[in-house]
Length: 460
Ligand code: CMX
Image (cartoon, rainbow, N blue to C red):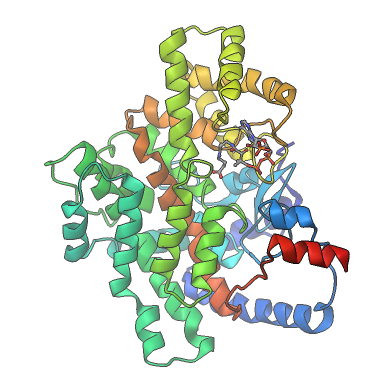
């Protein structure tokens, strides 16, 4: 089901591997090449196909959370209900084949995914390293942000802290400063890119500071190492730099959580706020607060909490029957099974499968009771959810698997897990911010209706 796609074959057959060694462009250089083509494509869509119909708007869309309504432009990725996510047409497996890893590592890294999302091109090794260095050079936090984060109560949820830190970083916004000076619309994207790179660069130090303040206070946080990739530095600042397997897992996790098309709550919120010309910091801070809901990104914390209470009650060697019974109890008490279901997907999430594959290659993970429990739950839950008959997708989403590996490697504070998701989702939301400005997308303003107004329309 999750086979390598034709796009990888195309990349390789075009001699891409050779070009990959040669090019040393910056991401800005590549964007300057691709933006005019996309601008032209949008112009043609507007002028030649502006009145083409993509689907009907039904009452069920208006009262049902707009599920399935095709109403948003998002360039970096498209989610297929059956096959899952494709980044510019490439599956996760395709990306694993062609996107550069960290030196000595195997997993995709944030930089190469960010490059792909932004430009639609696979970066060379040299281009990836150059971007890593740029991010590392820009990664230190301003002092006022350190003071702000240090002043917060350690009982304040880490996601609330992350959103506050990101919003406050807009003090640095080049986009906002340039807008105040009255720059032309055609120049917006360059400032948007600068802010996006600066924000991405600082997210690891910000997220790590939150972690250290809450869970490991008093110990000095290592300085950014200019020779490391973004996530290598993040792991280091969290205090796990000597844990190679956790660092590799974080690389994979952060790369594949980076974007999941535009309709999900965090991406859509970020895009909506950005469409008002609020700067990338404010736009992404808003997206983070959508991510902090338990039906969205917070589900990864909820999954582990739920699996661990199952483990606490039933012990380590839980049978499939016991899991089945526990699932029914969860459902009958009116709760959702965290980590299962999806607004678009109708098959197991390929991100879930990629994280499971990571576990399959490491005996210590396979032997861990909580990792085993996640796998066993996957063997039972779809049938139970089908029998329960409510959810349209009885299969696991990425959150079903993401926490147990963190837990195994010692990152046990699951209240923090959504922050890692938050570092990751910046890749897609910031990409969209840049493209929304490059394409001159307008402020979002859908039409709302009251129930009376809907009834009136139906009668007409
Ligand atoms: N357990 C129990 N019931 C579920 C369910 C689950 N895992 N998933 C969906 N349902 C229920 C819904 O609550 C809904 O019930 P009501 O009709 O009583 O309101 C019904 O099934 C139909 O829902 P749906 O159309 O299948 O799903 P939605 O698009 O409305 O919601 C999602 C999608 C993810 C919010 C939902 O599946 C859910 O709550 N899952 C558990 C939380 C979770 O894992 N979230 C993470 C998603 C990934 C992410 O965004 O990060």
